[in-house]
Image (cartoon, rainbow, N blue to C red; front, side, top):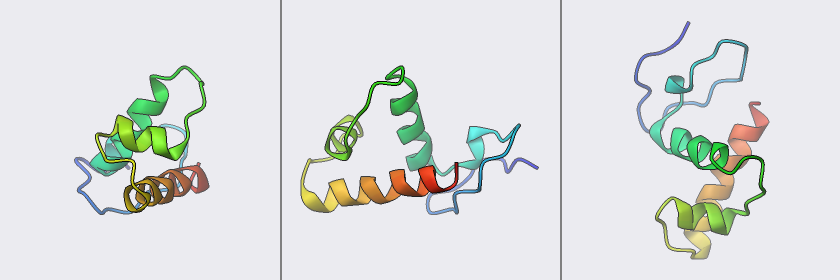
Length: 75
């Protein structure tokens, strides 16, 4: 059951077949879009932060790392 228009701060659901990316909060969708556009090429969290328009400072990079780990943990 897809949730229309997830809001910032919403929980990242566990992946399952047929799950629409719209269930993800905007920050997570942006991460997914950036990574999808890389065609499998690796990116570290500092590069992800810069791609998101954030300064590559430790606080921002760690926030991106946390979001990326949450996405991976949920498939």
